[in-house]
Length: 114
Image (cartoon, rainbow, N blue to C red; front, side, top):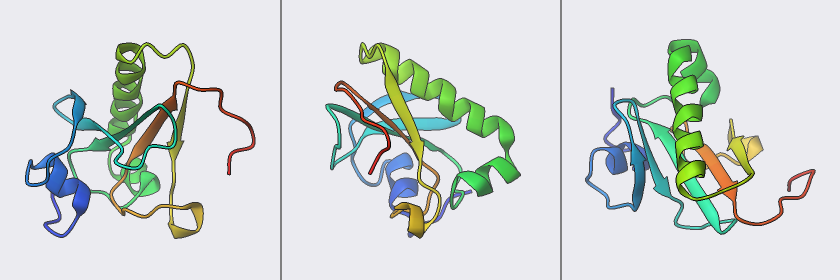
């Protein structure tokens, strides 16, 4: 399932170029064009789902696949520690409404975030 108007669906489909760093049958990981840390990679499911809650309801195994892909990205980037972030909904800062998991690392990350 894909949405032709969705930026991330178009990246997954190859219609928009991205620096892909990891790919599986179910997900694609690519560098964020506006990085908030030295390593900032987005991991997205190949299927279109509006947000993390919608993905979890429709396909719980896909959430595990995203986290597994994020772990592979972190290992390949040499990160000793990293942060995983799902922004779910506009009030939480989600700007592209296709589920995506941020992998952030490469610098100390403070708490609480933003």
